[in-house]
Amino acid sequence: MGSSYGDWLKEQREAAGLTQQQLAEVAIMTRSHIAHIEAGRRVPSKEDARRLDKALNTGNVLSSFLPQQDVAVADYFEAARLLEQQAVMIREFALSFVPGILQTERYARAVLSTSFPPSSEEECDRLVVTRLERAKILDDPVTPVVWALLDEAVLRRVVGGQDVMAEQITHLVRLVERGRIRVHVMPFALGFHPLMENMLNLMWFDDQPPVAYSEGLRMGKVHDSPSVVQELQGRYDLALSDALPLKESSALLKATAKDYGHHG
Image (cartoon, rainbow, N blue to C red; front, top):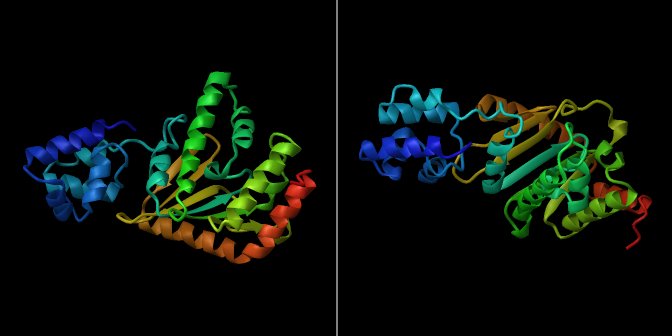
């Protein structure tokens, strides 16, 4: 998304003779949120942009020129990726494959190498590195708190071969056993459920309201409207209430890894 928007906000703030803290107070935001926007690490919500315009007397410039979060195919995840790095709690729902931050290198490569149009080997390497960088948020033993709700299809769809699947599912088991993540499986026997249509990522923060990110074929969208986020949280909660409990989910992961031929 670039920092030109953030640079312009900083110029307007300094021209108005305001510190980040003073602008935060007038715009009813936190200072750290404004710092993130100015540094290009965050895109403000439409409501935030309107309040910033009002606070800085910039008409509707900041609202009108909000960086687009759902236009360029190559960049549609960028805003969500930046938010993911700052979240204190993440709840993922995956319909067909393991969420990015939980992927092993071989699984990630299998997913990313089947794109259309095909990527070059160099481009695939770059994407794999980016995906593994995202996973580093799990290096911290506590934050963010991560829950993964997986449709059973995620475990049954063979991505990259039996060996890759065994390794990937064992990786999930280890994260669960360390208490680093919670995994709940939505069994096929459940039939249709409230999240069948899309993959979903819910994120909570210390210094701004929660957001949701949903993704489909060639499109991704960051949702920051409180009513939309609340509806998506409700759908997630409803689906989670029908999923297998942690203990049963963990047993299913282990059994599936064993089926794929992993006995280590």
